[in-house]
Image (cartoon, rainbow, N blue to C red; front, side, top):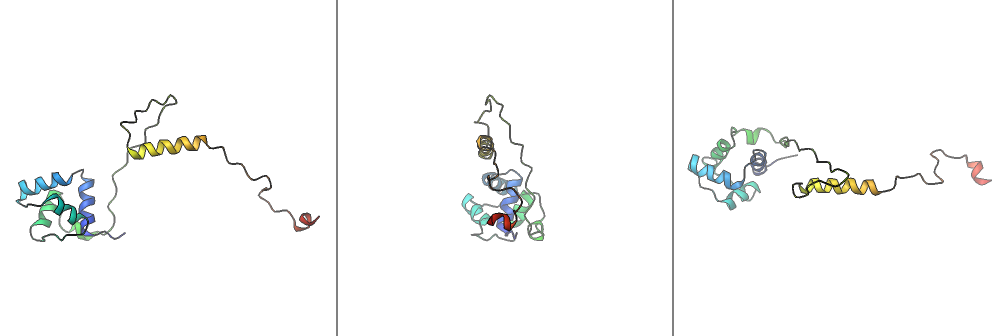
Length: 137
């Protein structure tokens, strides 16, 4: 999958667990680069270009990456490992306030799956074909 510079910057920021506001503060305090949240959002969404002499080197430094990192690989960077979905006990003691939306959907899918009847083959389906002559008689 082709990745634009803005997408690569956003993905790197997210993989580092940084918010746009944290990056903006770091750019200003450490590198003297002033960038608004709207401007950073536009860069990440491909709606604004970066100043290659000031902004890109500052972002690369803030993310701890060399500038060529954002150009060398156009592959999607590996996603961080996802935590396992917590299993609810039969008494339903899972605290839903601490579950992510994905975890809640997974639990709902498991519940629905457990409530569905096991699929049975159609009464006429045997998995083997009967000879043509038998069908005519």
